[in-house]
Image (cartoon, rainbow, N blue to C red):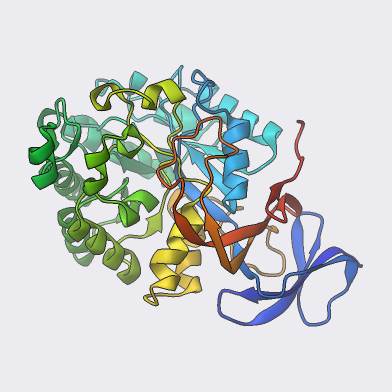
Amino acid sequence: MSANYVLKNATLADGSIADIAITGEKITAIGKSLEGSEVIDCSGLIALPGFVDLHTHLREPGFEQSETVLTGTQAAALGGFTAVHAMANTSPVADTAGVVEQVSSLGREAGYADVYPIGAVTVGLEGKQMAELGAMANSKAKVRVFSDDGKCVHDPLIMRRALEYVKAFDGVIAQHAQEPRLTEGAQMNEGAVSAELGLTGWPAVAEESIIARDVLLAEHVDSRIHVCHLSTAGSVEIVRWAKARGIKVTAEVTPHHLLLTDELVRSYDAVYKVNPPLRTQADVLALREALIDGTIDIIATDHAPHPIEAKDCEWPAAAFGMLGLETAAAIAQQVLIESGASSWERLAQVLSYNPAAIAGDQDSGQPIAVGAYANIALIDPKAVVVVSSESASKSNNSPYVGMTLPGRVKHTVYRGYFTVRDGNLAKVGKH
């Protein structure tokens, strides 16, 4: 059987060069001198498994002025992602089977990536009553990741019960680690810069104290805990200790916490206002080291789109959050590859294999192999890109505009068809 098409002379993560034949949704052959109905020259391009984002805000339902499932997954495709996990802080909140099934359905209709809804831990994200975790897990959406992201599950009893409950279906609780009493009115990282600017500080201990509590709770009930957007050197040490102790903890870092520091807040440009806040250069270096040595398991974007009026205002009134899907791979390349500190195989682990494994995704984040779904990101590693304000997202709150970053996603293949070709979105799905 002739392949639909062949990706010719692609460089795999291990450095080997091969042709990849794709027929329908699957990879049907990997080798040399393969033939197909169409041959696409991929010489010089790195072929990686399609990226999986464990932390995306798609905003739909309820906040479509910021983002929709369609525009968010188009941004994801441009970034090389073939799967995203949609956080629950929508309106209505994704705390019932009905809402998570709606989000999942919107993803299928859009056709740019697998969309896995994340269910809320508590009803309405209010932290008072556990949501219908079992109903969401047993729904058509088959939810396995639960989070109140944007808010912390601060009640230890509810956190313990949630950790116990998800064990029944091998679920995981993804915690937004922020002790609310320590961060009331907080605007940025607590430190020298906040003192100079007179902005209310956000102490590192507000994050670290919750992580310490939750890894101990996870150990007590023998359940899985995932730590969202690690941002401090102290958080790294706690996770490192917990892993050494055998606790079932995984952790993520965002691209912006790997690259940007609280010095940028001196500009009072609210594009740099984010939760958790940008920290110090010492924190950035600790996070990079932890990503390279495996203490931090994944990069997750925390893509958080906002309309212009939510950012183009005075700092205290501005919303927290920044875009991340279209630039994540470039920042990963800068931190892992251009630095000489790591490898393309590690990049594939932190952007594809590991997030899929944490979430229990069956069809995403699989190695490029015969029989696997053809989910592939093809990157031109030698390209140099000045980040533009133009985006597939409905919002434009990117902190990287004007920055020069390495690499460019040339093609994205999702379930056998191109969602991005030659750097441009392809028309797919029902739109």
